[in-house]
Length: 242
Image (cartoon, rainbow, N blue to C red; front, side, top):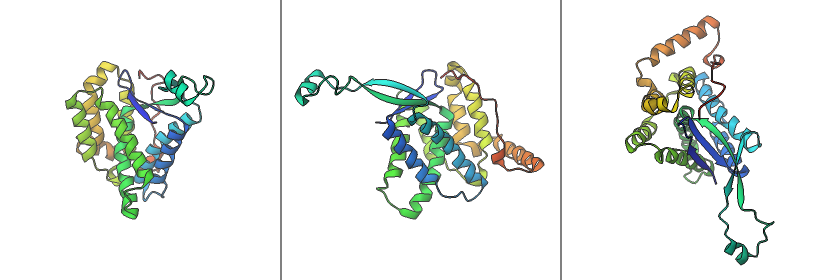
């Protein structure tokens, strides 16, 4: 079963699951973003979700972290089911990885765009891939509800719900800088800046600096004769205070 938990210092979330959980989550998101992007902006949106999938894949391949979790099987249950100690251990092995909170919130907004595209084609309320993705992001949101104040949580939930991504206005570098700055913060700074940071993500089109930033990026692309997907920042911290 997938589990999501806010990290101790509000750096992000820890995502837990066994091989099958993570593999199916991977396949579900791939299903949503598998079609060719209609332009460079939508491609950039896909790329952000592929970055999440990169972590998922390396986790179920055993290249991230693991945690032993009590499987809840009591001694009475062992006797009733005639299970020997060597047949069922006391713990299940969960594979897990950390993921930055700003990136998670952005993913939750981006994935709505691709679900809407699929729904227009199929109109299938029983689509298991879409339901899997919605389930994952619902438990991710619940992990915030458990730790944040009601006011903060409701603001974030409302912002995600009302956010609409227009692909031709999506500039990935804006969100990349937000994630870098957030990764460099202390817990106290994150608690103080949490709502402004989240608003800069789900209300980016209303942010006073966003369109000036967009113009600057487009100018750089023109000067370098490249598109927005060729520009990256390389100053992520080596160590994050999760």
